[in-house]
Length: 161
Image 1 (spheres, rainbow, N blue to C red):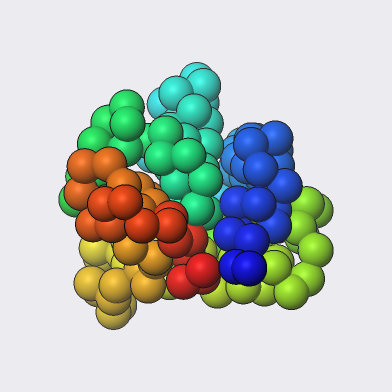
Image 2: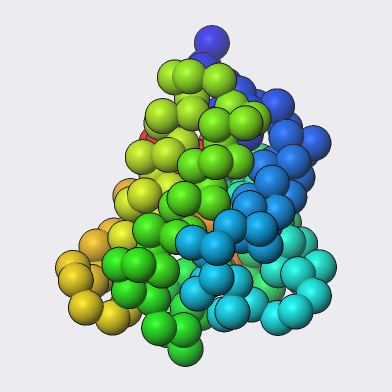
């Protein structure tokens, strides 16, 4: 018997949606997140949808983002935005607040660590750049889909599950 994937441990679709919504609620409300909020459109509907779809596959659930948009290519898609240490830290502040509200330990700490690796990877201004996100096969695509790298195998989440 195999251990449940982070997607399952978190609580599946409903929990991923809740995590995404709380993340963006914090981004909208926290003064410390003003810089990253300004990188987003005034209406966050599409941003919420894309992050939810990405996290679904990243956590080992359905590869919704890959099915809709292809391989996430996170770093490339974020290159137009000036992401420095402060922006990365603001993103993590919002995500950690959402995790604190919705996720039990030890999963909370494991996800925070995986999110931090990804946030570090997104930096393209100053500081250490180009650090790999350390995700399971295929980044946001899980084990299948275009660019997923896994083919028919079991999907892997950000924790190497």
